[in-house]
Image 1 (cartoon, rainbow, N blue to C red):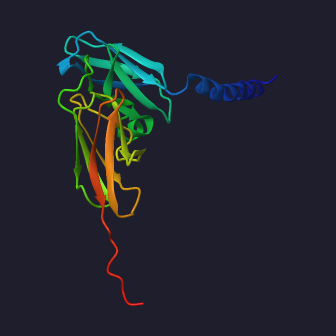
Image 2: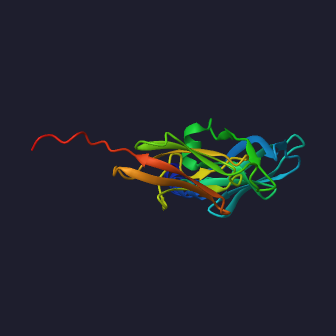
Image 3: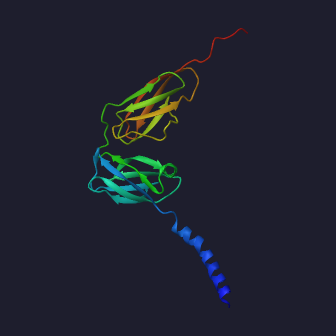
Length: 214
């Protein structure tokens, strides 16, 4: 066999192997750097973990100043959440958001968690405005970092943003559009995962003008 034929054969084998090798290697992990906080204090030598659909996707130990450097496996289409020493932390992000925001494959992310998930102030709900076809819902006194469910006359309704989580002070803010244009009084409510809840009255106005002649 000539040298040319040997070279062509070797190149053909390499061409066949390259796609398989690239597929086996997969995407390299995304690196996140930032500072982790527990109860508003830098979390020194704490364990930071990343989770996707209940499966751990990364782990790192913070430095004395709370800074961390964690590699997270990429799984497109999933929301990733974090924990600091086992306590749920905010924020969470979807992979789509990361792809849009990150520089290269590095992303800056500060994490905040609380060790005692209790409300800091009495629960309350404020609507602004309290009449119309849409309103902004502001909540206080809910369980920090808990998921919030907003209802309209007892039925869950879509909000912006979605999903909603109370911050580390037990507060949240969201917007919603009334799911009806039927005039009348309604109740908008909010509740967290441990049962803290409140509601406020909302009015859908009558937008019809005076009736004209028959």
